[in-house]
Length: 160
Image 1 (cartoon, one colour):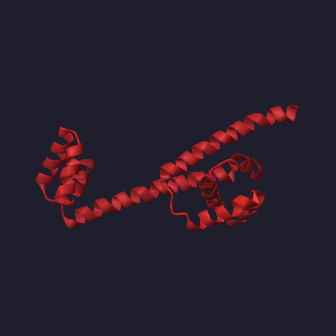
Image 2: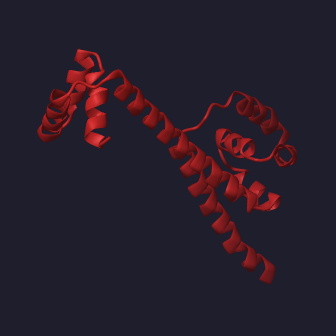
Image 3: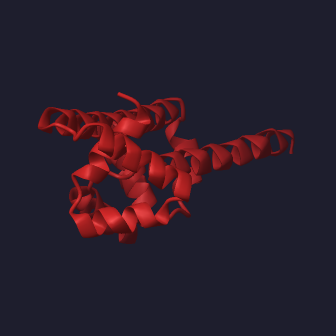
């Protein structure tokens, strides 16, 4: 099913007021295209279910890709480097990273963090919901940058 048809199916299934508000935010050509597509054939219930299922499946794939990338990145970092990279991070970011690690490794790293931070991290990990894939990507990019900066400092420290 084309993206245009998917948009038409979703808009056709919105309440009339919300549909009108959404179409008003599009440019004239986009709005007209969606109207024309809706006029061709009213979407069936099966078509609507298919569009919603595709959307949900696409979002789940994005998240799992993000999680896999985070897990993969963390697997390639030793504990000392990881601790140095996250020590100044916001507790929510640290909780996301610890929650992405195998439990034994997460417990070991948690124990190496300052005591005043540990309880807050445990609470955050316990109450954490599924983060958006964009949030995971931002954490990955930030962590990679900090690791690269740390790696850049290591040779200078060894030479000293």
